[in-house]
Length: 92
Image (cartoon, rainbow, N blue to C red; front, top):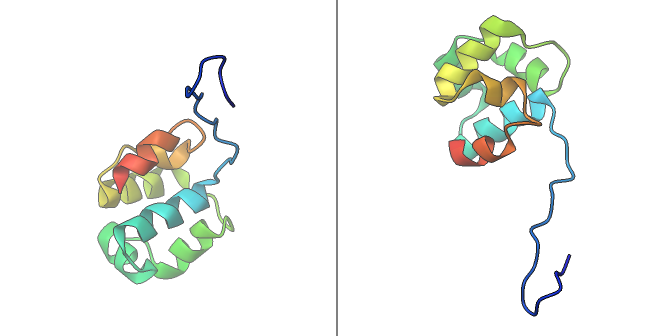
């Protein structure tokens, strides 16, 4: 959206709400990891990572902590993606 001054624009607001599963997939892909590699790094089976990425199971505190450690990020980035969008982009 353009402001009243010439050549000045307001930044667009994000319109997409991410799920926890989408954040996990995004972080994994930004790191260039397969589900198997993420599984090895965090101690969660590749099957469960797939279920998490597809929002088929709830993540829970222990899994969040394991994944956050593997990604070297704060657990809130995974648990509360709607509040941490900027941090997700920095994590890659």
